Length: 363
Image 1 (spheres, helix red, strand yellow):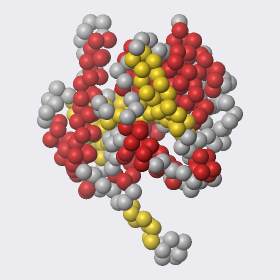
Image 2: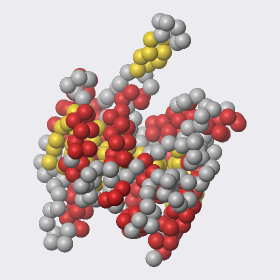
Image 3: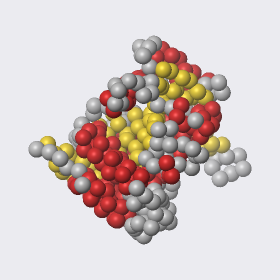
Image 4: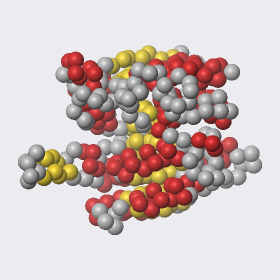
């Protein structure tokens, strides 16, 4: 039996609560494989007790795992960004997880705040370049706290980093079209493969590297429809016509913003899942919500984002049948309204939702 070594980082706030339910569902969906979970303590609370951030030896250890399952990070008593950069950027940069993969998929029409939009209209994926841009941390603050204070932050875009994210987007678009054709009863195309690249190169001229790389890589994929949008137009169209998108690829900063908008279109932050991956090598999977300290410990946070992130991890590991079963179980509970919402106001506890998904898998 195949055994996957999975690192587990609960983190802060509601992180450990939703991760616990994700692990519960992972055990329920086992089918010809097993897990060995390795737990890590890194969080804001751990830092307050020990002053320890993630050491290099742990990053080296993470590279040997099959994947990492992560909850959330952020503690109100710790300097913002300190532990986040140590853990999240330690994973993203240390393991070179250059693709941030965020599905925007509506499972039940009543969850969507957009008028007359159905699950057929809201089903696309955003590829966010995950290692560059303003998140590289270049810059700083001069004369902090004085009237002459100056803050500088620099964006960085490399041709290699830009091109590999774009190329992954084209390959994913082909894969999604193939899956749609296989699912179609008559074998015909339900929706053409399409990649939309999003930048703001008209105003931020350094982003012209994105425009040029997209045009050049796109020549290798004549079978894939191609579109280039500026980020403000993309945000508008996500609200007006989400059905226009299949695969979106964009910069680190714009991807961060657009995928929160996408989360609301699919029902809310409580159901939004993500994967940070180096294709064929390493992956870290997490819900995109934060640590939500205001509701931590109350047992009311929705674990669906974490559960669906666990499903993405299964798909990354090659266990597609198990991943599909997990997603189908979640979808059935939402469509039937047995889980009436994807936020903390569902009337169900965090553990009850995890139990419901686990039972649905058994049936």
